[in-house]
Length: 195
Length: 195
Image (cartoon, rainbow over all chains, first blue to last red):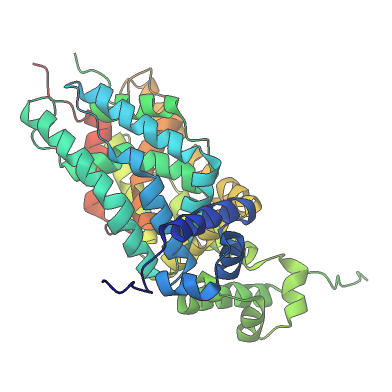
């Protein structure tokens, strides 16, 4: 008979902890989020949480990876602009969700003074999404739709950076009409036609 | 005889406080910056600081406005691409300065959970710079260099957002070669030539 592993996470407790972290982050902002608060809300001991996660940032990262999964599907219908628009609109939907904005903003805030959090955000959230977009752009470049000299990770950055800019600098609301403008400028260029 | 105003800021003390805030922010990160620490380092009483500024964020904002002045000069030589490159390279120089990165990162982190700080960053740092760039782009658009249908604030966002993206998400270092790529893509577009 197998010995039960006392260190094994209870899936129900794990989900309760992720839920609690997201709810409290929305209610009190990231700055007001504490391990004690999460434990109380989730109905578990603080030691249980510390056994599984070193920090509140680690809990939010896990929640973001797990619940932000939908933006990991990159469409491929053969129409590059339509596929980019569909995927970027998914990002807009995520960025305009108040819960998402609260915890992603909190994580990125924490990343400014903690290089470990910054590296974890890049490795677990940003990079997998950039890689998928590069893959889709590669097919378009091979099909002759994109200039052969375009560096694809740089193009991904140009497409997505304006969404992060509004999310983090709070200049204007992130929006689907913004996606239309970004795609027009990045694909066609701002320079007047020389003809 | 005029009565001296006891509320009048001593310029020397003010500069000492800005210096202290910047030095301590670089040394301890924004999270470790305190009003007590700034007062001690600047050799003034904590009450003096609180009389002039409501928070450490307000001190850093004033420092950023005052010391980040160089990026408020927008060149106009008649060559749009060269002017944009010169100005964007100035921003790269600021973003790659460790002191600037520490305090601007700290301010933007604070903005994620404090809408007043977010609004102050936009009003005093971002907007004046966007306005100057829009002015320069307007001349280019009137001269027929840019497509007449391009929304200029949206173009400014496309040009500068990738610099903020790297500064805040810590994916790759902000660099002058990045400026070359951004200008090529944003002005010429990524789509292959249809000819």
